[in-house]
Length: 204
Image (tube, rainbow, N blue to C red):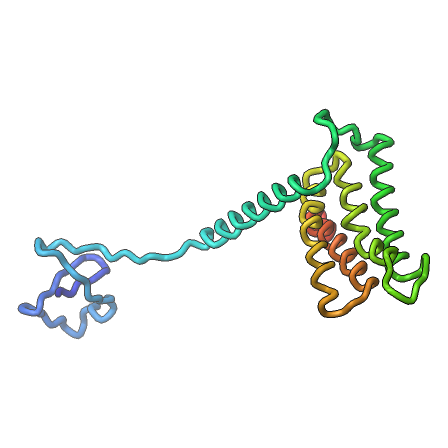
């Protein structure tokens, strides 16, 4: 075991020979530390393992990419798709694109009317209110996915295709309410759009 000074000039002191510095010297300003040396007298450098801040961000981004891949693959497998292998004719600006868009949001509105028991009112749970509760998943999302929409919007719809069934199954365990389920689906719909399409981001 030897003592070595980390400030130049480097001096090595052993236990056998220790020189006392005079009071006027600046030895007190030197930082001494104990370091291990090899048999040949060469000091072995001390390595300190530090975690780079970018490593945590890279791991989170990798997790996000994996989740995105799983969601897109699952939605592409189970969500309704075009019946033909040709290019999607519902391009932006076409009439078919607008028809699918109007159909999607109209089914959302009609589902809310049915869920709140405003149309075909009934004192008991019935098929109409059940359809209203599931209208966003059964009609809105498939209609909007049928368009040739941007990748960000398609990704948001893929997430919603998996999230909304979880909400519709979980919420009735705590509160059996058709309007509540439809409201939660609508909130999740617009929250996902705001996140993926950057509605809340400030533009310069």
